[in-house]
Length: 116
Figure 1 (cartoon, one colour):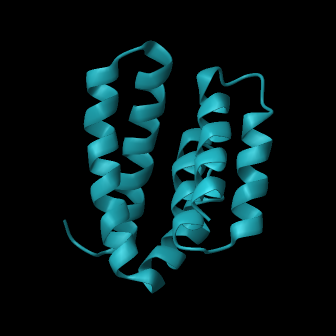
Figure 2 (cartoon, rainbow, N blue to C red):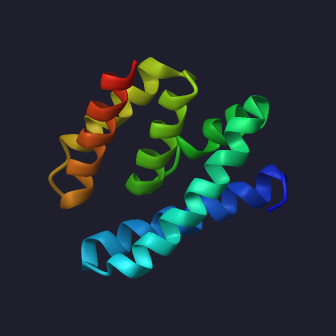
Figure 3 (cartoon, one colour):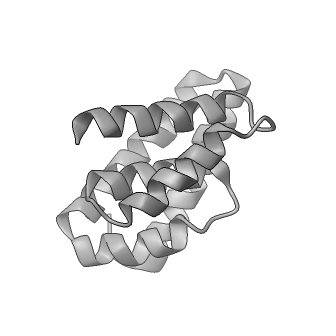
């Protein structure tokens, strides 16, 4: 996978949306496939922190809740904009319109806090 931030941001968004929709629809195979792609992108991000920060500045501002969940989890993993990421996850976890994704945000925050 190439290290072009625009390409990686587009792929991140596309796969986070697919993964979120698959989660809501109970299509775990489709969701797992998108998750695998997201983990590959996140690995690239973790190897180049400047690239990660550039991408996270865009991704954490997304309108898509699942993009924000994945982006904030990554931000917490690399200790970037920790307070902002935590607040976004708290806000999403309190949302009543996005079903199980609000629980995913809560768990993302909970797991990351245990690791810190």
